[in-house]
Amino acid sequence: MQFVYLILCILGFALPYSQLIPFFAEHGLDLSLFWSQLFANKISTDFAFDLLVSSLVFCIFVYKEGTRLNLKYLWLYIVFNLVIGLSFALPLFLWTRSNHLETKLSEKAA
Image 1 (spheres, rainbow, N blue to C red):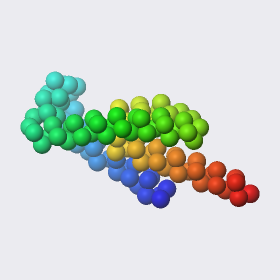
Image 2: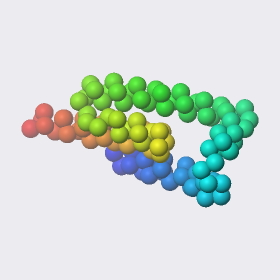
Image 3: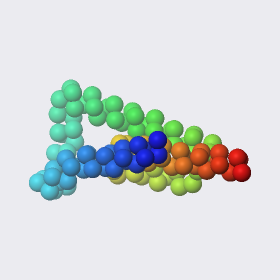
Image 4: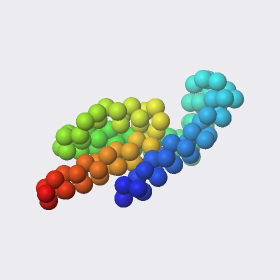
């Protein structure tokens, strides 16, 4: 699964930014236009709300699971979620979590 998480992490960065970079290249940092287009109709608003709720769930999951497993730098996944996006931050966290759990298992076996 670790390889799958890494591939999803790369896709989670590349696909959204393939749309975001041209938007900002054309319009600059026009956040007013960005927000108006994000909530332009019921379908885009549905996706925006879904992403906002999913991001909140992700933040709670990172805090609870990261604290339970004693993972470091949990704040970084929240920053990645806010700056890059959930499609990048979630697979990155799952990859880190998977590595951590695998390391713990191999230490236990040794």
